[in-house]
View 1 (cartoon, one colour):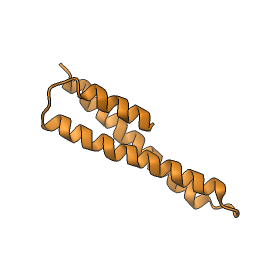
View 2: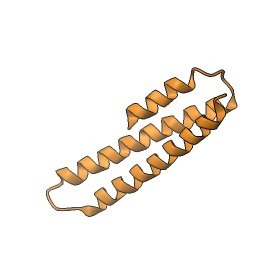
View 3: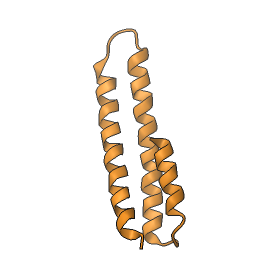
View 4: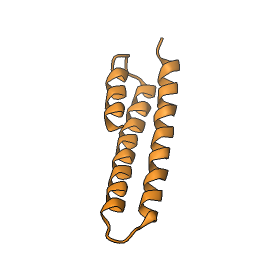
Length: 82
C-alpha cells in the first residue's frame, strides 16, 4: 500500500502545482506512515509469544483509516484532474 501511495504521489506531480497538490502530497505521506505502522503492529502481533489480539486489532484499525484516506485522496484527484 505504501507503493500505491508513492504511485499516486508521482501521478499527482504530472499536474501543475498548487495548494491542492500540497495537501494531497501531505495526506499521502501521512497515509504511507499509517500503512507502515499497520504493518509493524501486525508483525508484532504475530511475533509475540503470548496471543495478543490488541496489536492485531490496532493494526486493522490503522489499516482501515489508511484505506479511507487513500480513497478520499483518489476522489479528490479524480475531480481535480481536468
